[in-house]
Image 1 (cartoon, rainbow, N blue to C red):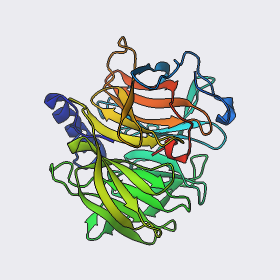
Image 2 (cartoon, rainbow, N blue to C red; image 1 turned 45 degrees about the vertical axis):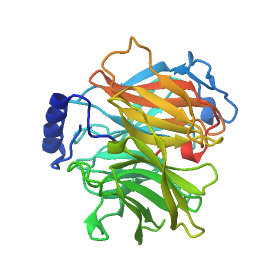
Image 3 (cartoon, rainbow, N blue to C red; image 1 turned 90 degrees about the vertical axis):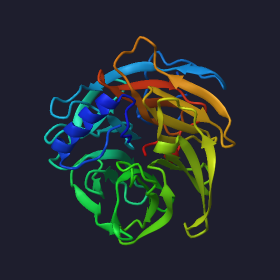
Image 4 (cartoon, rainbow, N blue to C red; image 1 turned 180 degrees about the horizontal axis):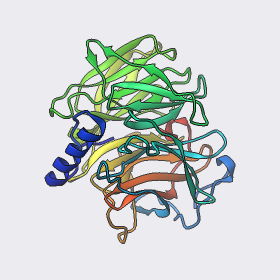
Length: 351
Protein backbone atom coordinates (compact mmCIF):
# COMPACT_ATOMS: atom_id res chain seq x y z
CA UNK A 1 0.00 0.00 0.00
CA UNK A 2 1.26 3.46 -0.82
CA UNK A 3 0.36 6.79 0.60
CA UNK A 4 2.04 9.54 -1.42
CA UNK A 5 0.38 10.25 -4.78
CA UNK A 6 2.27 12.39 -7.22
CA UNK A 7 -0.06 15.40 -7.01
CA UNK A 8 -0.01 17.33 -3.70
CA UNK A 9 -3.57 18.53 -4.10
CA UNK A 10 -4.85 14.99 -4.57
CA UNK A 11 -2.80 13.90 -1.59
CA UNK A 12 -4.45 16.41 0.75
CA UNK A 13 -7.94 15.50 -0.45
CA UNK A 14 -7.40 11.77 -0.19
CA UNK A 15 -5.76 12.00 3.21
CA UNK A 16 -8.69 13.99 4.58
CA UNK A 17 -11.29 11.64 3.20
CA UNK A 18 -9.51 8.61 4.59
CA UNK A 19 -9.11 10.19 8.00
CA UNK A 20 -12.86 10.71 8.16
CA UNK A 21 -13.70 7.30 6.74
CA UNK A 22 -11.34 5.26 8.87
CA UNK A 23 -10.75 7.59 11.87
CA UNK A 24 -7.00 7.49 11.51
CA UNK A 25 -4.53 9.83 9.85
CA UNK A 26 -2.08 8.46 7.32
CA UNK A 27 -0.99 10.33 4.22
CA UNK A 28 -2.14 8.99 0.88
CA UNK A 29 0.76 10.99 -0.95
CA UNK A 30 -0.21 -0.93 -6.79
CA UNK A 31 -1.13 -15.55 -22.92
CA UNK A 32 0.85 -17.34 -20.19
CA UNK A 33 1.68 -20.99 -19.76
CA UNK A 34 -1.41 -22.66 -18.37
CA UNK A 35 0.18 -25.81 -16.98
CA UNK A 36 -0.62 -25.93 -13.30
CA UNK A 37 -2.89 -22.87 -13.40
CA UNK A 38 -5.63 -23.23 -10.76
CA UNK A 39 -9.05 -24.01 -12.14
CA UNK A 40 -7.85 -23.67 -15.74
CA UNK A 41 -7.79 -19.87 -15.41
CA UNK A 42 -7.46 -18.01 -18.65
CA UNK A 43 -7.88 -14.50 -19.92
CA UNK A 44 -7.75 -13.83 -23.66
CA UNK A 45 -5.52 -11.18 -25.11
CA UNK A 46 -2.43 -11.44 -22.90
CA UNK A 47 0.72 -10.66 -24.83
CA UNK A 48 3.85 -12.76 -24.93
CA UNK A 49 6.65 -11.65 -22.60
CA UNK A 50 10.18 -10.96 -23.74
CA UNK A 51 13.26 -10.91 -21.54
CA UNK A 52 13.86 -7.20 -22.08
CA UNK A 53 11.81 -4.14 -23.00
CA UNK A 54 8.11 -3.54 -22.52
CA UNK A 55 5.36 -6.06 -21.79
CA UNK A 56 1.88 -4.79 -22.66
CA UNK A 57 -0.70 -5.97 -20.16
CA UNK A 58 -4.30 -6.44 -21.26
CA UNK A 59 -7.45 -5.54 -19.33
CA UNK A 60 -9.41 -8.40 -17.82
CA UNK A 61 -12.20 -6.44 -16.12
CA UNK A 62 -13.12 -3.58 -13.83
CA UNK A 63 -13.67 -4.59 -10.22
CA UNK A 64 -14.46 -1.36 -8.35
CA UNK A 65 -15.31 2.30 -8.81
CA UNK A 66 -14.21 5.25 -6.71
CA UNK A 67 -16.20 5.30 -3.47
CA UNK A 68 -18.17 8.44 -2.72
CA UNK A 69 -17.35 8.12 0.98
CA UNK A 70 -13.58 7.94 0.54
CA UNK A 71 -13.15 9.57 -2.85
CA UNK A 72 -11.09 6.70 -4.25
CA UNK A 73 -10.61 2.97 -4.70
CA UNK A 74 -7.34 1.09 -4.22
CA UNK A 75 -6.98 -2.60 -5.02
CA UNK A 76 -4.25 -4.70 -3.39
CA UNK A 77 -3.12 -8.17 -2.38
CA UNK A 78 -4.21 -10.44 -5.27
CA UNK A 79 -4.07 -14.03 -4.01
CA UNK A 80 -5.26 -17.28 -5.57
CA UNK A 81 -7.66 -19.38 -3.51
CA UNK A 82 -6.75 -23.10 -3.61
CA UNK A 83 -9.81 -23.68 -5.83
CA UNK A 84 -8.58 -21.17 -8.42
CA UNK A 85 -10.57 -18.07 -7.50
CA UNK A 86 -8.62 -14.82 -7.21
CA UNK A 87 -9.11 -12.73 -4.07
CA UNK A 88 -8.26 -9.02 -3.83
CA UNK A 89 -8.74 -6.33 -1.18
CA UNK A 90 -10.04 -2.79 -1.64
CA UNK A 91 -8.02 -0.72 0.85
CA UNK A 92 -10.31 2.31 0.88
CA UNK A 93 -13.69 0.57 0.84
CA UNK A 94 -15.90 2.27 3.45
CA UNK A 95 -17.84 0.35 6.13
CA UNK A 96 -20.44 -1.91 4.58
CA UNK A 97 -18.84 -1.99 1.13
CA UNK A 98 -16.89 -5.07 -0.05
CA UNK A 99 -13.39 -5.08 1.44
CA UNK A 100 -12.42 -8.50 0.13
CA UNK A 101 -13.60 -9.52 -3.35
CA UNK A 102 -13.46 -12.80 -5.25
CA UNK A 103 -12.86 -12.75 -9.00
CA UNK A 104 -13.57 -15.48 -11.52
CA UNK A 105 -11.27 -14.33 -14.32
CA UNK A 106 -12.59 -16.88 -16.80
CA UNK A 107 -16.22 -15.80 -16.41
CA UNK A 108 -15.26 -12.20 -15.66
CA UNK A 109 -17.40 -12.00 -12.54
CA UNK A 110 -16.71 -10.49 -9.15
CA UNK A 111 -18.51 -10.85 -5.84
CA UNK A 112 -18.09 -9.66 -2.26
CA UNK A 113 -16.45 -12.07 0.17
CA UNK A 114 -16.07 -9.96 3.30
CA UNK A 115 -16.91 -6.53 4.69
CA UNK A 116 -16.86 -4.96 8.13
CA UNK A 117 -17.11 -1.55 9.74
CA UNK A 118 -13.53 -1.16 10.84
CA UNK A 119 -10.61 -2.52 8.85
CA UNK A 120 -8.48 -0.93 6.13
CA UNK A 121 -6.89 -4.01 4.62
CA UNK A 122 -3.73 -3.57 2.55
CA UNK A 123 -2.77 -7.15 1.68
CA UNK A 124 -4.08 -10.70 1.59
CA UNK A 125 -2.33 -14.06 1.65
CA UNK A 126 -3.17 -17.67 2.48
CA UNK A 127 -1.19 -19.31 5.26
CA UNK A 128 0.60 -22.59 4.47
CA UNK A 129 0.09 -23.56 8.12
CA UNK A 130 -3.68 -23.33 8.64
CA UNK A 131 -4.99 -22.46 5.17
CA UNK A 132 -6.74 -19.30 6.36
CA UNK A 133 -6.66 -15.94 4.57
CA UNK A 134 -4.60 -13.33 6.45
CA UNK A 135 -5.20 -9.59 6.05
CA UNK A 136 -3.10 -6.69 7.31
CA UNK A 137 -5.16 -3.92 8.89
CA UNK A 138 -3.07 -0.81 8.32
CA UNK A 139 -5.55 1.45 10.10
CA UNK A 140 -5.55 -0.38 13.42
CA UNK A 141 -2.11 -1.92 13.52
CA UNK A 142 -3.18 -5.54 13.52
CA UNK A 143 -3.59 -8.69 11.47
CA UNK A 144 -6.83 -10.63 11.08
CA UNK A 145 -7.65 -13.94 9.42
CA UNK A 146 -10.67 -15.33 7.61
CA UNK A 147 -11.85 -18.78 6.65
CA UNK A 148 -11.19 -19.44 2.94
CA UNK A 149 -14.83 -18.63 2.17
CA UNK A 150 -14.53 -15.20 3.84
CA UNK A 151 -16.30 -16.00 7.11
CA UNK A 152 -15.10 -16.54 10.68
CA UNK A 153 -13.19 -13.27 11.17
CA UNK A 154 -10.52 -13.63 13.88
CA UNK A 155 -7.95 -11.25 15.28
CA UNK A 156 -4.56 -12.91 14.82
CA UNK A 157 -2.32 -10.18 16.22
CA UNK A 158 -2.89 -6.79 17.84
CA UNK A 159 -0.95 -4.51 20.14
CA UNK A 160 2.51 -3.02 20.27
CA UNK A 161 5.80 -4.51 19.11
CA UNK A 162 8.82 -3.28 21.08
CA UNK A 163 6.75 -0.42 22.47
CA UNK A 164 5.28 0.81 19.20
CA UNK A 165 2.13 -0.11 17.29
CA UNK A 166 2.65 -1.38 13.77
CA UNK A 167 1.34 -0.02 10.49
CA UNK A 168 1.37 -3.46 8.85
CA UNK A 169 1.37 -3.34 5.08
CA UNK A 170 2.34 -6.62 3.40
CA UNK A 171 2.99 -10.21 4.57
CA UNK A 172 5.36 -12.99 3.53
CA UNK A 173 4.94 -16.50 4.99
CA UNK A 174 7.89 -18.84 5.44
CA UNK A 175 7.50 -22.53 4.71
CA UNK A 176 6.40 -23.29 8.27
CA UNK A 177 3.73 -20.59 8.30
CA UNK A 178 5.48 -17.91 10.35
CA UNK A 179 4.68 -14.35 9.23
CA UNK A 180 7.14 -11.66 8.13
CA UNK A 181 5.43 -8.27 8.05
CA UNK A 182 6.44 -4.97 6.49
CA UNK A 183 5.71 -2.31 9.12
CA UNK A 184 5.40 1.10 7.45
CA UNK A 185 5.87 3.16 10.62
CA UNK A 186 7.05 6.73 10.08
CA UNK A 187 5.44 7.18 6.69
CA UNK A 188 3.13 10.05 7.62
CA UNK A 189 5.98 11.85 9.42
CA UNK A 190 8.48 11.21 6.65
CA UNK A 191 10.79 9.48 9.13
CA UNK A 192 12.71 6.23 8.64
CA UNK A 193 10.96 4.26 11.38
CA UNK A 194 9.90 1.35 9.18
CA UNK A 195 10.47 -2.20 10.38
CA UNK A 196 10.33 -5.85 9.43
CA UNK A 197 8.51 -7.84 12.10
CA UNK A 198 8.43 -11.63 12.45
CA UNK A 199 5.32 -13.09 14.11
CA UNK A 200 5.21 -16.77 14.95
CA UNK A 201 2.43 -18.76 13.34
CA UNK A 202 0.43 -18.91 16.58
CA UNK A 203 0.45 -15.12 16.93
CA UNK A 204 2.06 -15.19 20.36
CA UNK A 205 5.51 -13.75 19.71
CA UNK A 206 6.55 -10.76 17.61
CA UNK A 207 10.20 -9.91 16.94
CA UNK A 208 11.69 -6.91 15.14
CA UNK A 209 14.20 -8.20 12.57
CA UNK A 210 15.10 -4.86 11.00
CA UNK A 211 14.36 -1.19 11.70
CA UNK A 212 15.32 2.24 10.44
CA UNK A 213 13.67 1.52 7.09
CA UNK A 214 12.09 4.17 4.88
CA UNK A 215 8.36 3.31 4.86
CA UNK A 216 8.63 -0.46 4.49
CA UNK A 217 6.12 -1.65 1.89
CA UNK A 218 6.59 -4.75 -0.25
CA UNK A 219 8.04 -7.92 1.27
CA UNK A 220 8.68 -11.31 -0.28
CA UNK A 221 11.01 -14.26 0.24
CA UNK A 222 13.49 -15.09 -2.47
CA UNK A 223 12.96 -18.32 -4.40
CA UNK A 224 15.09 -20.35 -1.95
CA UNK A 225 13.66 -18.86 1.28
CA UNK A 226 17.12 -17.66 2.28
CA UNK A 227 16.20 -14.01 2.62
CA UNK A 228 13.59 -11.29 2.13
CA UNK A 229 13.27 -8.65 -0.56
CA UNK A 230 11.89 -5.44 0.99
CA UNK A 231 10.79 -2.28 -0.81
CA UNK A 232 11.18 1.09 0.89
CA UNK A 233 8.56 3.45 -0.48
CA UNK A 234 10.06 6.84 0.32
CA UNK A 235 13.58 5.94 -0.85
CA UNK A 236 12.56 4.02 -4.01
CA UNK A 237 14.88 1.17 -3.17
CA UNK A 238 14.72 -2.58 -2.61
CA UNK A 239 16.72 -3.98 0.28
CA UNK A 240 17.71 -7.59 0.87
CA UNK A 241 17.50 -9.05 4.37
CA UNK A 242 19.40 -12.33 4.65
CA UNK A 243 18.03 -14.70 7.30
CA UNK A 244 19.68 -17.26 9.54
CA UNK A 245 18.57 -20.84 10.16
CA UNK A 246 16.13 -19.79 12.88
CA UNK A 247 14.56 -16.96 10.90
CA UNK A 248 16.69 -14.29 12.54
CA UNK A 249 18.29 -11.42 10.61
CA UNK A 250 21.83 -12.20 9.45
CA UNK A 251 22.63 -9.18 7.26
CA UNK A 252 20.99 -6.38 5.27
CA UNK A 253 21.98 -4.28 2.28
CA UNK A 254 20.52 -2.07 -0.45
CA UNK A 255 20.04 -4.35 -3.44
CA UNK A 256 18.27 -2.31 -6.13
CA UNK A 257 17.68 1.40 -6.61
CA UNK A 258 14.48 1.94 -8.56
CA UNK A 259 14.43 4.86 -11.00
CA UNK A 260 10.73 5.52 -10.64
CA UNK A 261 10.49 9.23 -11.39
CA UNK A 262 7.26 10.39 -9.74
CA UNK A 263 6.34 6.77 -8.96
CA UNK A 264 7.25 4.95 -5.76
CA UNK A 265 7.99 1.33 -4.87
CA UNK A 266 4.96 -0.66 -3.76
CA UNK A 267 4.46 -4.41 -3.28
CA UNK A 268 6.85 -7.16 -4.43
CA UNK A 269 6.30 -10.63 -5.90
CA UNK A 270 8.96 -13.23 -6.78
CA UNK A 271 8.63 -16.01 -9.38
CA UNK A 272 10.18 -19.49 -9.44
CA UNK A 273 13.27 -18.19 -11.27
CA UNK A 274 13.92 -15.57 -8.57
CA UNK A 275 12.76 -12.60 -10.66
CA UNK A 276 11.29 -9.65 -8.73
CA UNK A 277 8.06 -7.93 -9.80
CA UNK A 278 8.10 -4.48 -8.23
CA UNK A 279 4.75 -2.69 -8.19
CA UNK A 280 4.62 1.09 -8.57
CA UNK A 281 2.41 3.75 -7.03
CA UNK A 282 2.16 6.85 -9.17
CA UNK A 283 2.45 4.94 -12.45
CA UNK A 284 0.32 1.99 -13.63
CA UNK A 285 3.31 -0.25 -14.26
CA UNK A 286 5.42 -3.03 -12.76
CA UNK A 287 9.20 -3.27 -13.19
CA UNK A 288 10.86 -6.69 -13.32
CA UNK A 289 14.40 -7.39 -12.08
CA UNK A 290 16.47 -10.54 -11.80
CA UNK A 291 18.11 -11.52 -8.49
CA UNK A 292 21.26 -9.64 -9.48
CA UNK A 293 19.43 -6.35 -9.90
CA UNK A 294 19.33 -6.30 -13.71
CA UNK A 295 16.17 -4.69 -15.04
CA UNK A 296 14.52 -7.22 -17.34
CA UNK A 297 11.24 -5.61 -18.38
CA UNK A 298 8.53 -3.08 -17.61
CA UNK A 299 4.90 -4.21 -17.60
CA UNK A 300 2.68 -1.37 -18.84
CA UNK A 301 -1.07 -0.96 -19.24
CA UNK A 302 -2.18 0.37 -22.67
CA UNK A 303 -1.67 4.09 -23.18
CA UNK A 304 -5.39 4.50 -23.84
CA UNK A 305 -6.25 3.47 -20.25
CA UNK A 306 -7.25 6.68 -18.45
CA UNK A 307 -7.62 7.46 -14.76
CA UNK A 308 -5.20 4.76 -13.61
CA UNK A 309 -2.31 5.76 -11.35
CA UNK A 310 -0.96 2.66 -9.63
CA UNK A 311 -0.13 -1.00 -10.25
CA UNK A 312 0.23 -2.16 -6.68
CA UNK A 313 0.78 -5.90 -6.87
CA UNK A 314 0.68 -9.06 -8.98
CA UNK A 315 -0.27 -12.72 -8.57
CA UNK A 316 1.12 -15.36 -10.93
CA UNK A 317 -0.84 -18.59 -11.34
CA UNK A 318 0.90 -21.30 -9.29
CA UNK A 319 2.85 -23.49 -11.69
CA UNK A 320 1.93 -21.28 -14.67
CA UNK A 321 3.04 -17.94 -16.07
CA UNK A 322 -0.23 -16.08 -16.45
CA UNK A 323 -0.04 -13.05 -14.18
CA UNK A 324 -2.78 -10.75 -12.88
CA UNK A 325 -2.02 -7.29 -11.58
CA UNK A 326 -4.17 -4.88 -9.58
CA UNK A 327 -4.39 -1.42 -11.16
CA UNK A 328 -6.20 1.54 -9.58
CA UNK A 329 -6.85 5.27 -9.83
CA UNK A 330 -9.66 7.82 -10.15
CA UNK A 331 -10.94 5.76 -13.09
CA UNK A 332 -11.60 2.77 -10.82
CA UNK A 333 -9.97 -0.50 -9.79
CA UNK A 334 -9.07 -3.01 -12.53
CA UNK A 335 -7.48 -6.37 -13.09
CA UNK A 336 -4.94 -6.65 -15.93
CA UNK A 337 -3.10 -9.72 -17.22
CA UNK A 338 0.29 -10.41 -18.82
CA UNK A 339 2.84 -13.19 -19.32
CA UNK A 340 5.28 -13.44 -16.42
CA UNK A 341 8.93 -14.29 -17.07
CA UNK A 342 8.84 -17.28 -14.69
CA UNK A 343 6.30 -19.59 -13.12
CA UNK A 344 4.22 -18.67 -10.09
CA UNK A 345 4.99 -19.88 -6.55
CA UNK A 346 3.80 -18.94 -3.06
CA UNK A 347 5.98 -15.81 -3.25
CA UNK A 348 4.10 -14.61 -6.31
CA UNK A 349 0.64 -15.25 -4.88
CA UNK A 350 -0.49 -12.48 -2.56
CA UNK A 351 1.51 -10.16 -0.35
